[in-house]
Image (cartoon, rainbow, N blue to C red; front, side, top):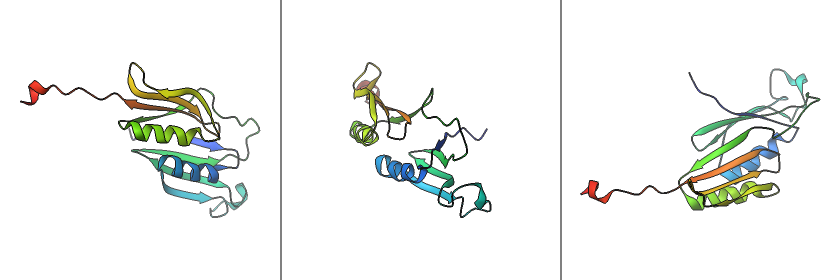
Length: 143
């Protein structure tokens, strides 16, 4: 099996979302094609994103503009979970994703993590930011 990658549809503001995630999460834009630059230019607005891929950490997340769905909705029962081992980076990502969004659980220490929080960003995408608690090193085993 090759794997599973999230594919997020936006309501005409996909380019704005891509630029936001590049800044907020340090994402790398791997690929982007508009309808106008595709072999099917009549399928959507010429500047709308037909398909894009971003690398966020070790993951690839795909994006598009969904301009043809009458029942378009965001959020629901899906969250994108970011796993980190750097508390400062977790705070930065959480703050960046919160800009214009809604914090549903503030980033704080929990019994399972050094820092965990949940936010719905300004595009309606649910995120969980989790920073693992540092692992104690058995000093007797290292000797």
